[in-house]
Image (cartoon, rainbow, N blue to C red; front, side):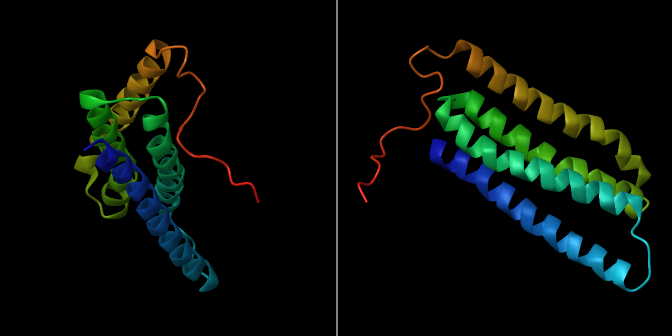
Length: 143
């Protein structure tokens, strides 16, 4: 189960980057055609890109800090919800006129903040022999 959680974070990060890059290409098409790019599209694009990179980093940080059990599940679920919720609200709320969704940005942003606070807790409470050790078990090649 714990491996599934880190795979979920990393996979969500890479999928987010693919979606972000696709939106970026669409923005280029708009610009090449002489049209402007709406601000809401740019904002969602930027947020998805940055938060997706952080999802990949989290996929490595969670096992490195030995976050397990319920905390590991909470970090994963909260982070992925926030990763997609923030740009989704910008795109759906502003771009598609579903403005009633805009206040949910506080929910998605809160999910990201809580995930970070759990990671802060894990960092501060880890044993000193884990601190800074990173993943173990791999031996460097001699070549």
